[in-house]
Length: 348
Ligand code: BGC
Figure 1 (spheres, rainbow, N blue to C red):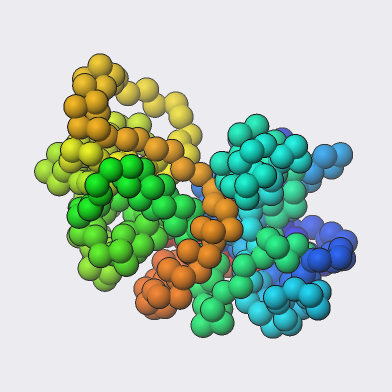
Figure 2 (figure 1 turned 120 degrees about the vertical axis):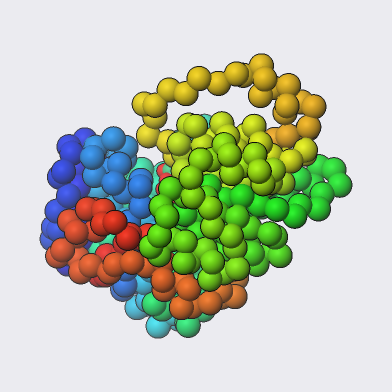
């Protein structure tokens, strides 16, 4: 069967290759791959800036934003043939560390976790794949067209959970949220913010195109332009930062309302130094009880929260996030950005 594979140590080594048919081990589902989403991490791996092949192998099957349909399921599992499923990205470290032992592998403490399609485990960009039934999450059958958004939604579900847990260390009633970045993570974060009844604002650099439209369609307010000016004017209770851009991060941290929470989700590529008055930022954060929290990946609880958020969402709106669907053979098109791209998906 065909899979999208690469050598993570060699830039531009992505290729559709023939790989052996997967054979489910006890407790595993055999799944027909429907689609994989392409994100910044996939592009980094394709540029050989991130990613690890399975031990003893040169090539890794890419793809961590999965969607598939169950072909066979163990009788003792909660799945049956035809179920729509996604596979979870991360697996606990073998030790396991305390966090992994508690099912919170998204917070792994020793870094020895593995990730499908990213770190030492084959991903989901294959015509068929296997997954342990304990690491598969069922989706509402209505989501067949858009369920590939599940993994990025799990990442923002976790981010929102972190914000709430941090906020609830004392009396907490947030009202206004600013999301910086209107890519898939930012837009899905805005969607969850609106679902929670918050006054949601989204900031990006573009003036027109699908991003402002998508923001307005969920009843959030779109802003473009200078992050410092917008954040200072809004003074948000919560910021979900989804750009990873240094200057935007600094503006977010400096301009929250008192008792503000900034959740950082953007994996910066680095390289652009910004001058920061750390003592000044420290003074504001102390005097306002502010918190900045980083958030990556998602555990099973967050996947379930994401499944609920997607099931509640407007399917047309979700479909609007998927700008292009390219066939596996044309995978290279998915790695070449086009101006109106939000999420690009490879159809398997
Ligand atoms: C994925 C996460 C993963 C992270 C780091 C992100 O693109 O969405 O699941 O933990 O990359 O590898």
